[in-house]
Length: 251
Length: 321
Ligand SMILES: Nc1ncnc2c1ncn2[C@@H]1O[C@H](COP(=O)(O)OP(=O)(O)OP(=O)(O)O)[C@@H](O)[C@H]1O
Ligand SMILES: [Mg+2]
Image 1 (cartoon, each protein chain N blue to C red):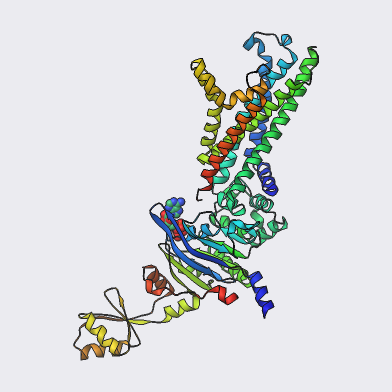
Image 2 (cartoon, each protein chain N blue to C red; image 1 turned 120 degrees about the horizontal axis):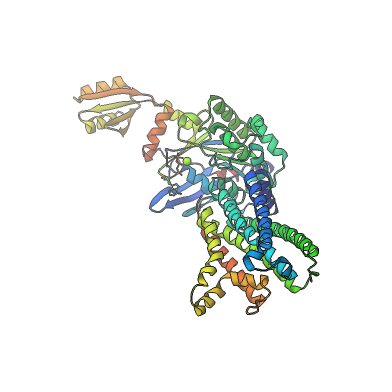
């Protein structure tokens, strides 16, 4: 499996379209994060200097949402391209065990997501430190709230890119994978329009709330363990269903 | 003696199709196929369009799951080998690759994935004559060049068995010549080659054996020599006003008689003898022709659904053990 993942990395090195997409993911996320921070006066009516240190971090980390969306697209393209362009014959001849093939692809997407989101976090961190120090906003405390935010951001990117990959395996199509992951991402926003008691119930089923447990320091109503459980159930259920479908397909 | 047998077993890979069946809905693509591929030989896999050649090949490498039956490679399923492409190399679809890669990149990715020595990549580019085009993107390749790249992919793991689906498609005269030479070379180095085609002419010069299928069923499995002998055995074609009567008369004279179209296929008697017999028995002949079928004719005839051409193959297990 090590060799297979290495081969996937080779593929993104060789193919300009993948390279550009990853570059675009990183640049776009950084640009979004910075724009959010500098437009805070317009969007929230606060001056940059009025923000707390943790709020600065919080706002730039919104750039991670852009990364998640870009990686949703990337994961779906990456998975389906190897399944539909016909390359599937060669790929499955090398790895005829479907379970192994599936796990390799998901592992690759997971590793790539973690690398990209970690790189982004480092960039944001350095940038925020710079902003904080030139505005003399005080020191950043490396407490559990801070680390929870960072972990939450990485988890979010990882979670949605895996959902997209699993969706792509299930639908055997790029739009299928993207649409699935984006629906899971944006449905909670729609659900919030329902009456409170209904939406409360539905929202606790969706992963968004669990992800926010990490990112939003004010969230108290749901525990870490509960949040992780919800995310794990989502990933395991989606993967199980999409693998079951993939296993039965004749190419 | 024992040692040679053991050595032989080590090199010679045995692929057995056991009651292999694939149904797509109500359509049976492959129908209870029983077959042992002869190791170390070039086997031509013939059949008309849609007869199930590709499906059979895909089932050998676990791309398609059989509805019934199984394929056994040296006692195991293909997918149970830790490094399967070092056992069986396949070309199923020459356009089965990312067209934005160069030939070299494509092979290099596969070599990495399958843990194959990178030197093999250079070697295969050389063998398939793609050296000069190795850094061009595959999308600029002609069909023939893609076939070559597909063959390079199939050979990359230096497998014991090479399975190629219609490799002659899109090949020019030079390519066909090269391919034939390659098959002979592979067989000489002890590899088994299974090559499919729907044209007898493409493979008759290279195949040691032929397997013919039609509508997913095995119609014939014989050596090329057997097939040639069959084509050489000419016969007299007879049509007459009273077919049953002349049949009886001919059979009395020890002729071998088979029904064919609207008449009879007669062996063991020549045209003159048949004509005289007809006159003696007051039968009016409508046609009396000497027929020498070509290999293509034999093939067409077999695939026309004549089941009496099935020749059962010797069990290779017994030969090897
Ligand atoms: N995925 C599929 N779904 C439904 N039917 C299929 C599928 N694949 C093949 N078939 C059918 O199975 C039959 C055998 O197809 P196959 O491709 O194996 O034939 P073939 O001998 O390779 O033909 P050709 O010479 O045209 O390549 C055909 O009737 C085809 O329509
Ligand atoms: Mg075919």
